[in-house]
Image (cartoon, rainbow, N blue to C red; front, side, top):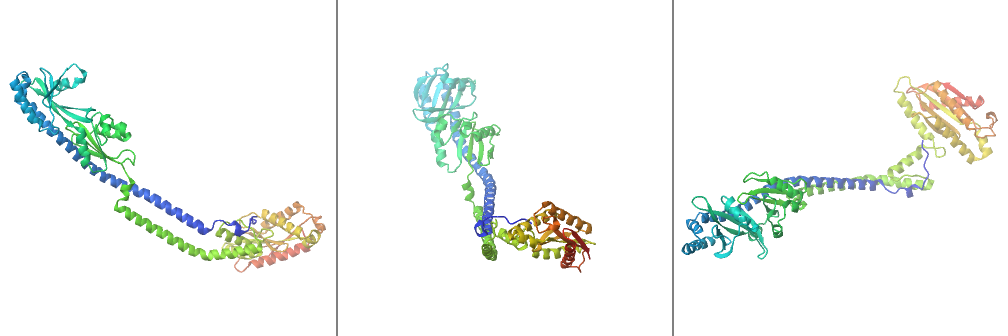
Length: 535
């Protein structure tokens, strides 16, 4: 049996009650449920929202793509009609004919008014004079690198091409549609075209664009050609440089698009949102709509109210359960208060930190001898009968009981004092406890200087072996005792033992009485010896 630890009194040592531990535990458990449940809910709803968002963004991309394509296709149709005009073709072949020039200029002016930007330019391949809105501007030098567009359009373009440039003076980004003009033999004789104010057009798109997603137009090189922030177009920023990994993935996906196809996907990061991507066939551009994932989008759903209601119900259950448990702790708290008072009255020492520890400590006090630390008489009586009941279920189970008495202990007290006598009993108890080591065996203080050793499943020979071990161990300890002349001036013990087959008819007291008779015979025989009796 473990000795009671030293320390401050129970009332001052116990710091955290079981009630508080339970409240803290249940609170932490609820927080774990709430946090993990919220994370799972957000992930689940995020997947649903992304799917819905992807469909909506695909529609957005389709609409904005059609807007741009329809606008550009309308301009292209007018340009191609001009390029096929017999009057303009004749004028381009005879630019010095003033009468023909006047007629052509009048027709070109009519076409110019049909363009959205009310702008048109042309140049023939004979005098290479560049006209812009009916006015001569300059003569084109095809060998000048800045005029790369001239040969590109005239000799390497079958129908039309595009180029984008930024005019810092006008703070305007323009998309130029350039179409070569061919004679009847298919020989290029000049070019004409018009410009679309991309800045104004994109702003028109964004003015009418109410969706929260970011919209980007970009070309086959990944260069941004349309964005809410005009500086991205002016600076010719690359989509990958602006958006990083997401931009790179968008650009890579664009290379695999088929004509007219629109796709949506989620970037690699779970929180990266949703991207819809489509091709603007007329311009050989792409348009991407990007909507980042936001937790606020999840919170706006009706299912969030359902989840919140579920969490409130769970919290209410936790609160109700805590109140119920607190009610159960009421009687336990009253019992512990009473035990605290007993502890204070007895000056008991304990390291218990909660109600269970306090009850455990007082249970130990109830079954333990306070002086020696071994079991007391109350525990021995109850456990001995319990052992007999258990062994009686077996077949011919043996039980041995040893009664141990310190020889001439009254003389020891008279000679050395009661304090030293108490120390002597503690030493004897320690020796008995150390030598009786099987899990079912136990030592108890029977009263005064008398101890009992209970040995289940032990026959006569086993009991004799234990008894002789105890006798020798006490002798080897050589505790001085001048009143014990027979023991050579040292403390000795006398032991009486009883052994019998366990039956329902025999009680623990039967074993004790038999062993006590044997103990009496041991003392009568000269002490410091073991006498055994079988009944």
